[in-house]
View 1 (cartoon, rainbow, N blue to C red):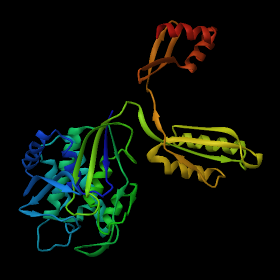
View 2: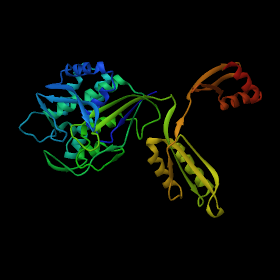
View 3: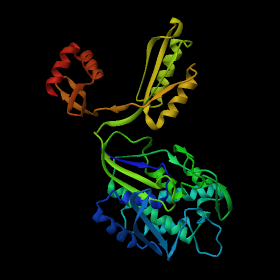
Length: 397
């Protein structure tokens, strides 16, 4: 399984993400990608690949100019520059649709930019189609969004995990005045994303960066268990005491490896019926597993352990469910790595009737097992013992 990890501990902007992903390509292909991007015909756009050093670390920076002007990393691209050309969402989506790129890349790029327009529209009380973007900022963002979407398609990771994202704090000046950080549109785009302010004042995440993160991420958290492959550094324009970059890591993980959360609590003032209901509710909500077990609590009291296993990115959701539907005052969350066999089900025609066979494989292990419910049905229909049917079916697997 190919895993892409994006370390956004210093925030994210579209050009930083593009440069980080670009470094994951073989070195001889990077300039060719820039030539391809420039050849797409995005109006007025010229991209250049530059080497950059931040805190002694060598990486890449993609400089994008629109008719010779380079966009800053603020929000000056939003409606408000009456002396410059502006473009609406339909104009931009039309430009993306006309590019010579795969349809799936067009679809991702269009949705990312539409997300930016929706967020800006909510902030300014307008429909997305009524939002207008300054020409330089609009085409700069189109280049970043298309470039990242195209690189992501070329890399084709099976799973993408993003770190918690640094937003910065304080205020930022834009065409409409002074706004809080993260800026309102960026904050909307970051809904559902783990973030932290950090100790650096100023804007660390742009709307384009936030929209791309939401589009690419399958989950959020720390570096997954994997074998390290190529590492890329996409550098920001500003200098800080900490290296200002997005780090992209491409690695390989054994199929069936995933990060999960184990959430549990102990209960001594809840009936067995209520605890059983809570367990069933967790399973109905999509928990990977949930069980109860007897435990001896303080002062020798008999109690019940309620445990839930869920996807890491859903841990807060299941923690809230446990707090809401049990009498506990708190839950504990652990982050184990889960190794699982890949599973499939097939139907097998036997002399006694159809039987589903559950197969599992991975890590050098292969197993096959007939479905018990099907064996039980055949036992009732034929009058044969389940054990005999199981032996006969296993001969055919």
